[in-house]
Image (cartoon, rainbow, N blue to C red):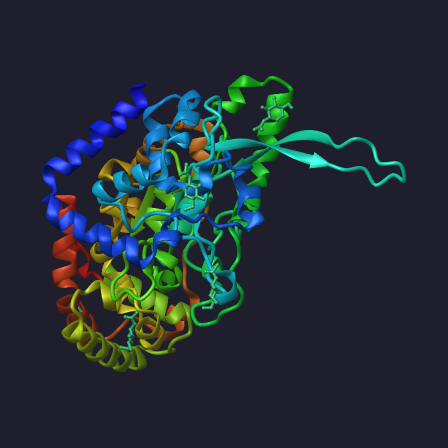
Length: 468
Ligand SMILES: *[C@@H]1O[C@H](CO)[C@@H](O)[C@H](O)[C@H]1NC(C)=O
Ligand SMILES: *[C@@H]1O[C@H](CO)[C@@H](O)[C@H](O)[C@H]1NC(C)=O
Ligand SMILES: *[C@@H]1O[C@H](CO)[C@@H](O)[C@H](O)[C@H]1NC(C)=O
Ligand SMILES: *[C@@H]1O[C@H](CO)[C@@H](O)[C@H](O)[C@H]1NC(C)=O
Ligand SMILES: *[C@@H]1O[C@H](CO)[C@@H](O)[C@H](O)[C@H]1NC(C)=O
């Protein structure tokens, strides 16, 4: 059968390049360490409710592999894949270099966050532009003589795109403008924009420094019911055009960089550096996500964020905290095997007097580029967005494959009042020149890295030396 041949082929290709001895050694270690864990799916009912019941065999193979193959083959052959022997698919996943990004299962007695890699990729309805899937929900009657359960088909949706970054760079302003497009449906988060799930609620963070219980994937999905309801209605009334147009988003502008929950993922247990991060989880579940990034000059962004979060109130305090922050973070970098250890370490980040790290955009962006090719991202600078809003909005709509707005809608979008302004900055005044000089120096290497990644010198932010 074609599928089995495909697997064999992949296996043989992989074996051809891997030094067999090393691979077998690695395999033995893996088998003796966590044989059942690697193949065990989470048994939590709530997980499966979110994506419908998994096919009978799904619990016994790494869904990451399964879903990758599902992309290559028709849905009809899913059954073949699922009946393929455990050990072979296990082998394939190792030889393809995916040994870490596979389902491990969460241990609820240890209070672990759910393992999203154990969920099968949803069967997205190809008639819809937005990634949504149907589930049959069984409704039981409350009457004394229960009626037979009726099956009701209901839609669940993930966002079509994310505004992944960056806080205090104008993402709310951008969102307010693009949300005037008739095809964009808000979510149930703050401003209809932010769900804060991937970086916060999933791990139980409810603020920069406060924790509560982790929230399941179900709760994330429920936040997109607004769109699901529209689409269910459009489907029932056979309004085909709307199915091909309407989309929703998640505009949580810290999802790119707030990755400090990584130690709670079962795949990262006892690791010094993360093997699995938010992008891996998204790749596993999403179809073809699009990511918008709007980033401001890192120096100015830092000052605005500092005042906005009330980490201090004056230019003088900021100066002292920057000095202390640079010293602390440099210490961490000096003792780390890899810089990423500092950039995602919760206790380091939570003790920083100022969020220097978050303004090092390149470090985090690279983690995403390890998982998603560049074509999934549209990276804009806040300075360019403010200077040429019209063309920036066109760029965004083109990237999202949305129609360009009517001239009337465009006029409305462009004339809306600017909605980013930090009042505490009026009180505190601009930062001190010496602070700015110190920060320019500190951010230089990270900006250079970003400019290199983007192949664009604008990301050196040399034009941003004017006080704003
Ligand atoms: C796959 O593995 C599971 C648990 O490791 C086992 O219960 C099941 O019988 C295996 N299935 C096949 C087809 O070998
Ligand atoms: C979960 O962790 C506890 C405590 O370490 C252990 O006793 C239990 O066997 C684990 N459960 C599973 C399903 O791995
Ligand atoms: C839901 O139920 C209908 C009718 O029983 C069936 O045709 C359809 O395949 C089911 N859909 C799913 C996703 O299970
Ligand atoms: C995070 O940093 C703290 C303090 O430097 C260190 O003790 C801890 O081991 C680090 N955590 C991880 C997961 O590396
Ligand atoms: C800070 O620098 C700006 C521009 O370089 C200059 O105009 C201003 O006078 C300086 N402020 C102080 C307090 O030195």
